[in-house]
Structure formats: structure tokens, C-alpha cells
Amino acid sequence: MKTEVKFPHVQVKLIGEDSNSFAIMGRVREAMSEGGCSKEEIERYIELATSGNYDNLLQTTMATVSCDCEDCDECGDVPCTC
Image (cartoon, helix red, strand yellow):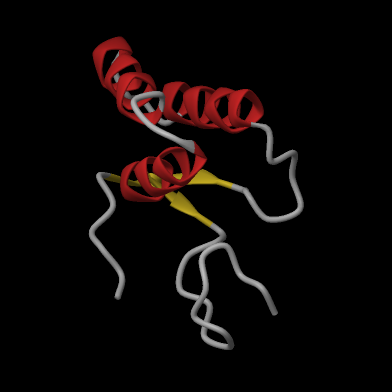
């Protein structure tokens, strides 16, 4: 089930990239900045993304920006396992 993304115009590639938490947040921060998000919106993303474990980071990221790891039609997993 796809949830509404807060900033759908902000695109971030997760598949095939470094899966390090800090690398993901850095890519999202840069994409949000380039996408016109305010400093407060970016800080709020970082606050929410760091408020839990790695799964929380991924879920927060996917709820905030458009990622290439959503809605796998083949396996249905996030991240995709096919």
C-alpha cells in the first residue's frame, strides 16, 4: 500500500547506492534543498529520521520524498528483494 509522500517532487535514489544511514540522510538533505524545501523542513526530516532504527530511517525517507524503492510490483518488498 502506497502512502502519500510529503514532497513528491523531490526524487532520491536509494537502490544501488550506499545504504549507510548518514549517506542516505545526506542524499535526502541535498535533494530536499535542491527541491526548494525550507531549512526547517529539512531539519524536521533529519529529526524524524534519527528518532529510531534503520527501518525508521527508511520509512521516514519514503514518507518524505519520492524514492526508487517504493511499490515493487514483483515482490512487494521495501527495499525490493527481487
